[in-house]
Image (cartoon, rainbow over all chains, first blue to last red; front, side, top):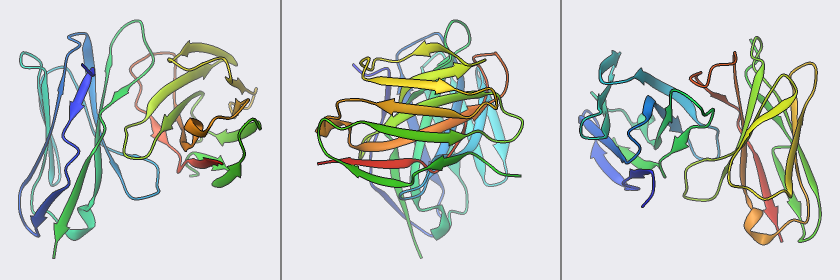
Length: 112
Length: 114
């Protein structure tokens, strides 16, 4: 079993839709959770960064962490064609490591 | 403010050859991590350098080695290239000694091994 599981998609939605992207994980030591957006043939770009459980909102993006269920989500409101990209979740334990574990990424396509 | 810069952007090598990839961290950052991203996969941690020392290594063979220079820039070296080493190699920089620092990625170096 992988430490981080993420549905690879592709996920196609119409412009303006609310998008829900999710990851599950198995390591209860994970404390830091990040979402990155990666356009084709580019490096990942940080979208959201949360610590422990709870919600965080930034513009059209909301990140949720449910540590009891080992489940994190990224919601995108009023999705735009420019949001079409691969979305990667990443997580790390607080202590004793410097590496982040990434999901495989979900490909999102927002149709105009 | 320059972000993370990597060179070269693309390169093609043959099996058995050696390759060196270079990275300049974001201004103000002192820590460099290297990740390998195979096609359709998420990035996999290779190693991290801080204060010119490798302080953590992922599950990669000794053919993968690195270096960090006093100006915080870094190199990734891969010897005896295999077909399976074909991937996007990502450099990420961060600041400070904590393990909980946000990573800023470069655009990557795409390596093709024939």
